[in-house]
Image (cartoon, rainbow, N blue to C red; front, side, top):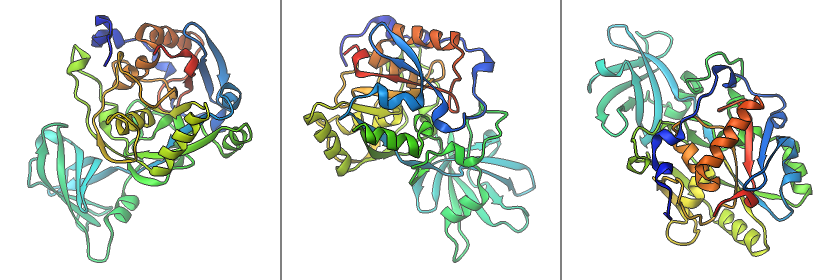
Amino acid sequence: MGHCAEADLSLEAYQYHLPPGYIAQNPVEPRDQARLLAVTSPTEHQHHHVFDLPDLLRPGDLLVLNDTKVIPARLYGHKLGGSQVEVLLLEALGPSRWLALVKPGRRLKPGTVIHFGADPDRPELIAQIAATDEATGGRVLDFAVPSGAALEALIDALGQVPLPPYITASEALPERYQTIYAKHQGAVAAPTAGLHFTQGLFERLRARGINHAFLTLHVGVGTFRPVEAATITDHKMHGEWLEVPEATVAAIQAAKAQGGRVIAVGTTVTRALEGAAQGGELRPFQGKTELFIYPGYRWQVVDGLMTNFHLPGSSLLMLVSALVGRQRLMDIYQAAIAAQYRFYSFGDAMVILPEARIN
């Protein structure tokens, strides 16, 4: 980390007021009709739409996107005795073991058995709470899978796609909370910047000489958990699994060698690329990252960023601040509110062009 103003390390500095009506409950159709606030220099921004993205970038630039796929991670079951239990799967710990958030959590101790299915007396799937995870406050669940069945297929059949808690009145179909290029199952939340892309947008980008590459980061609930430490450097990020394949590393190296810029589509892509470069250079990587990016961070790979608007006090807000500066970002957010942009997962987007970066 480089030198950083003390105020930029205070949690209070990342708070802002958002009127409730600005939280998008439904996505825009078509996807690329969403608005796009383009940060074009250290002092200027412009109002566009996502379909304008090809005109804002340069031929030779490379977009990197996250092809994780959201699983139907919210399951409703019953414990023996009848009371309902809500389970939000967070992370696979083994073939039939998951870390999960469980409600009502305090009353469910290790050893508790949960039945899933329409008839609690004839369960289609059974889980037992094996332990409490102190780091997340979640529970470790061991699933008993019926003979001849596959746990993934049962989760697909019994689960629901978990929309964020601030989306309370959505009419969107589950597939609208997936990117059109979602491929590798494992996320419990969507990489929302990618929700704006359409096949037509990809074709227009390609026609302008702007290519794209993929990586995978399975978005966990830790990404969206609010930072609670008064000094943000005391916050510890929850690890997330990622893979940056060799082909993507090669595409990035080729783009940079020819003068192109790397534009990350989403904070998850940013974290994955920078996490894979922590050894000093970008290399193919598979594993977990707990990298926390905040103002003062020295960038290794990412030149620009397309992202949605994030919750106050979130680690995502701090990551974006590391590109443009905290006060600048807060001013941009106020401009977005004044212009009635739609916020959060189903909302509008912003793109920080390389010309607007502070370091």
